[in-house]
Image 1: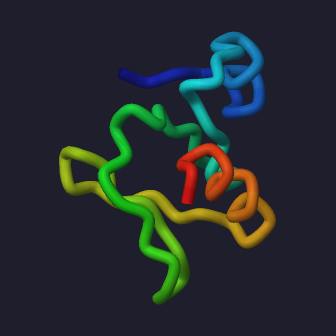
Image 2: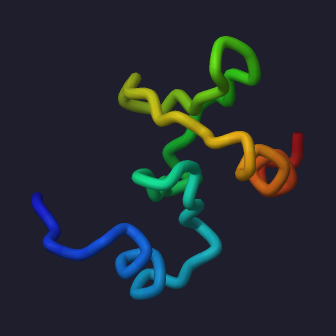
Image 3: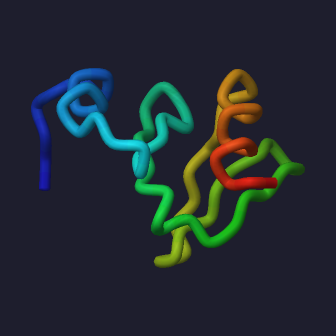
Length: 68
């Protein structure tokens, strides 16, 4: 589906620890993350095989949430 809201607005509406703002344009359900690639530009691989970039400023928080 298509949303007409900004990612920041959606993040505020969801307000759940299961979701993580991995990048300016991406909000990810952590339950669907299968792997975090720390090299080659750092990104997440989701269970469906798609990839999501992770900004440098978000990496530390993401590692804490993933327990890595």
